[in-house]
Image (cartoon, rainbow, N blue to C red):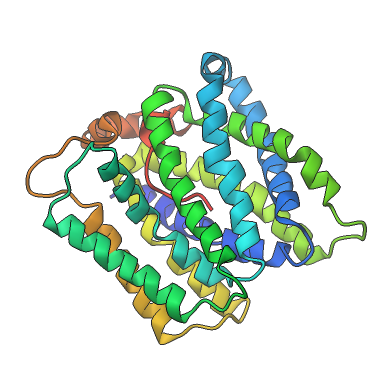
Length: 324
């Protein structure tokens, strides 16, 4: 990987590890719906003009139904569930549980019959979910199972979203899809988000958290991710999945003084090992879930770097990476 690739990789790992901490701060004064409204409104205000100026919105019109489905599954539902879960769960634990997205993605792919997992990948699945069980069984201190189920729902949504991109929106510009999805999410959450907005002024910490979620963890994150894909290719970029939870854990402990136990480390380690094994290639070639993305990555050394970051298509960004 080039020096620029490493810089983008590190930057994105930090940026996508921050949202869990910011959400935890924001839920002290804002409802989950209000947080989603503020975050998507900021993201739409910054990305939509850029996408429109490059002509990336018009090609989306014939695909509005699947675009709406992607918006609901990738943004509207999981971002609300994250806020709901963090009303009780710590930010670090939430980030670690979301790390199971590759495991969920593997299960969905196998259930759809597009791949037959070998023994190594099956073992990885068992190891990964053992890690989830360790976290849930020993680290969760919630009054009900609802927050854990909310995180599980988030993981499922993040695993389904890339499938929609790769199967129905593959040739569309990634920037246009993300800008339109953020705009649609803001419009959908406008009534509920405003209705639940608190009457008293928000604290400075919450305002900074909301601004960070919208400008840094959404807009900057997508732009850096597009640049990373253009630089190193889609498959290498998916490694970021294993960095985000570690950043979330460190920030939760260092900034929010959250508790970390032996089971936290064991569970996280098992999830990472299981995810690597479950999503690795077996010795015999298998049908790829996203053929175009794989083909693009095979030429990452040449073709990927010759593209502009903002010209990345949905083929390139259809990956099991959680955008918290």
